[in-house]
Image 1 (cartoon, one colour):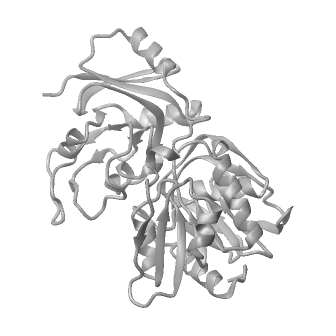
Image 2 (cartoon, rainbow, N blue to C red; image 1 turned 180 degrees about the vertical axis):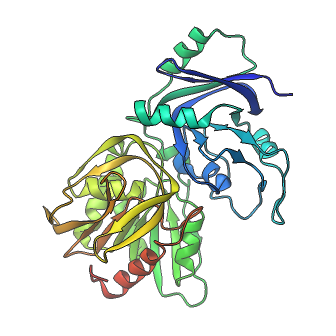
Length: 373
């Protein structure tokens, strides 16, 4: 039976609702996701590690859960907040209810809160620390104090929690054309699958893989995946990418990997006020003039010049994509060596498929070693 539950922000605001999933308490960074669908992919995305996700769509859980849509082996969110969880599960692919899955994995959730008001609050005040408390004998003041003692996302090094412990291989579908080393910073299942469909044998490697290990593999290219935490903490991976750039091994990075590539080129990163999370974010591809609707999950961004080419020790480059909502850098590419990245999720799990061509761009770049592929 549902009991009283509270979502408590570190600025002291409290939302009262009812327990859902597992009862207890949990802490993380409060963020909101704007997707109307795709809650299962959101929950199992390692990029959401240590975050409490509030869904802006009011009705969650109506299609249940299934075995096909998980983006990793478990749910990674620290907590989950929804307006109205569905009491019924109705979908031909469903293998069970969302709540049962949340309970089985011990995810503390809250239902019945005004997620619209919560979203507006986070848009005004910014993402912040949060706690969910249910079936707890605590005062509001005690809950706020506990939230304020919890770790901040700024300065968080979380990749070690989500990366694979050892290399595994996703074979190419059909004839193998390329071998790619995918550095697992929190990779989603959809990414190696989409590469394999293009004749790529993907070697998913731990985040602490060395340049010597990549040289031994002799890949045609290196993929830098999405992942959680603060990119400013990733100095070892940044050094690895600098070695790859010097060797002119083709590089494609997404999301966290985009930020890592940017840092390797000499740019800094900064924390966004409330980030981009959802499957409906408009991005301009400056190389084609096309506007793409894209899937995002990031709270940090790259500080790079958007109005002209830039110069690095590895040669010139340019910002290739920008957000049409707030002007954030959404993609960069080098002009004389084969390296590019985007801030969003072209694997579209969940999300639109406007950006799937980027995987084709990567395979073409590996084939020609040209940056204008």
